[in-house]
Picture (cartoon, rainbow, N blue to C red):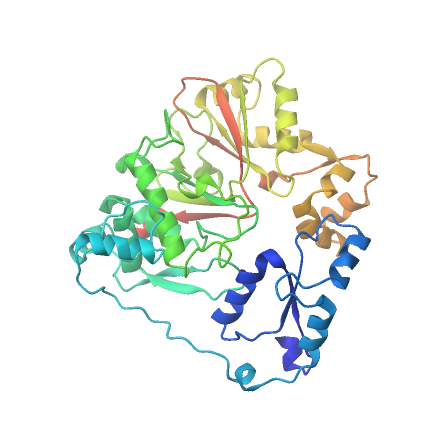
Length: 435
């Protein structure tokens, strides 16, 4: 846009699997005739000769030679359709027309307002009852969400969050947690091709007040609060950001089961360490929810046994080097680590940072590291510049202390632990602000 405003013609070039996404983004931004050309997917990991063949070949979307498509886009004069563009009515009605229950359920499903499971119809009475869970005004703005960086933000109110909470089957006492999640600015339906999901961790007194599970089965479907809060977050994420539609506003290649629900609480009472929110500057009597944009890998283990150092080292090396892990430990495991001398989470984090190493060649031979960290290294940003300068066979640290998060969760039926992708972004929000 800046180039064209400066009088320099431009053509957007995308890979073919992003065609519907690129076209829908152009349309949503009022520029449906934006000049675009396409090459095959993938482009990462291809040789110069293979990439040259893309350029010499046909545009896989438009069917014309790629070079011809590019030249035409740069030289063809703009017509009336180019200059007119599009505008949209952005407001939505507050209420639907009355109809039968079956027809309303069908409407919600056909409109893409559900997660493909049955919902509770959000009648005015049910939404009013849900709003009793907060002192905030129904028309107060909670926040803004969008599925990708290339779409506009959608702003939404307390009432709209309550509507989605009703749809998910939540109870009014859950609403402060759901509002806090909505206010985080973190979507539960983000569009990365890595199929990431948002993992949510609840801390503080609210856990027991609303009956959240942090013991046996905490990460499974064994708590109404865990399940309904997680589902409400997913529904509001897609409905209050303008949708989550494959090929148009969602590009996760494989998808992610955790997108249905990845919400749980920390087992603070059984932990030998301070709770996660206290570790990050909150007091024990405050309630918080922390959201991690990640969740696209899981590594599992037991112990610590005699060879735990070797097992942990290999597991850390198996984690994606672009995003450090959430290390979720059963209380048995946490107490056993204390016996080994790790009397704080930070000491265990520091051990992990020191032992999570890969040869520099292997670290940099990673799609996301190449795409997202390599430019920072070339720009001289540390520690990536030093890591890039390392000998290819030199083992380098792949995580910083802030990349690794330790939480205690589980019911002490086994010395189990798992590592979940935490993602490049963590947001912690005070639930008490939304009571």
